Image (cartoon, rainbow, N blue to C red; front, side, top):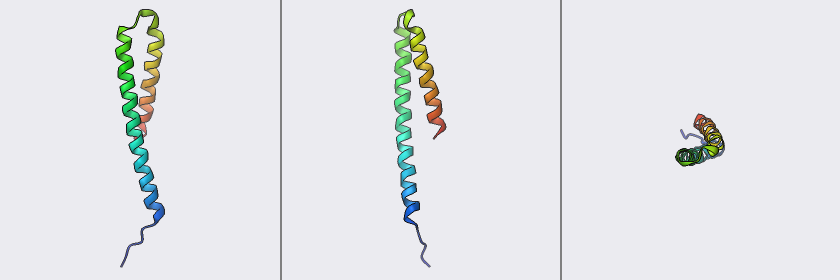
Amino acid sequence: MAEIIHLRAILQARRRQREQEYLYRCVEAIEHTLHRQVEEFSHAPAEEWPGRASKIRKLGELLEYATGLL
């Protein structure tokens, strides 16, 4: 007996796979930016620390959110 595969299920599975791939790329980009910001923070003058620390915190929160979606 043949199994019926619904086109909708196939399309949804492909969409979920693409979304996961995009999400992994997004996480990689956030990680890269976060590492760069931490490196720049270590060389920045003291008057720039609060602004840079804020960026690092926001990127960390964004990374936490994005990895939670994986």
